[in-house]
Length: 152
Image 1 (cartoon, helix red, strand yellow):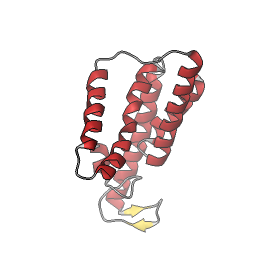
Image 2 (image 1 turned 90 degrees about the vertical axis):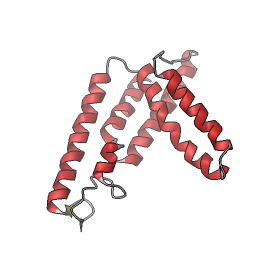
Image 3 (image 1 turned 45 degrees about the vertical axis):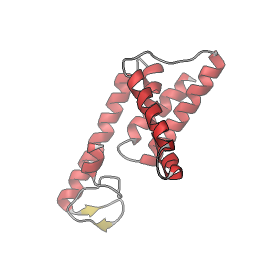
Image 4 (image 1 turned 135 degrees about the horizontal axis):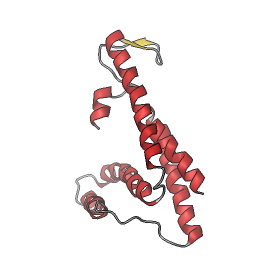
C-alpha cells in the first residue's frame, strides 16, 4: 500500500505544474489508498503538526460560511474544491523519508514548466496547442497565465 501511495504522490508532485487533471487524479488515488491503509491497519494515521489546528479551523469556518451565503448551492460547489487541502495531512502522515524525493520531483517539473513559459513569452508560440499566443506565458495551462499559476 505504501508503494502505491508513494507512486501517486510522485505523480502528484511531477504533474502539479503541468496538468491540473492529472495532479487532482493522483491526489484522489493517494487519499483513497491512504484511507484503505488506515482501514486495514485499524488506526488513524494522522501526524500531529502545528498547522493542524489552523487548517481544520479554516475548513470548519469555510463550511459554516457555506450555510450563511446567499446562494448555498454555489457555495457547496465551491467548498468541494477545498478537498485538495487534505494533501497536507497526507504528506505529513505517510511518507516521511521520501519528502526530499517529492520536493525534487516538484522542483524539476516546475523548472520544465517555467522553461516552457519562458519559451512561450519570448517566441509567442505554443507548440503543444499549435497556435500563436500573445507575448504572455500561459505555461501548460491555457486558462490562466503562467505568472498567475506561479503566484497561486
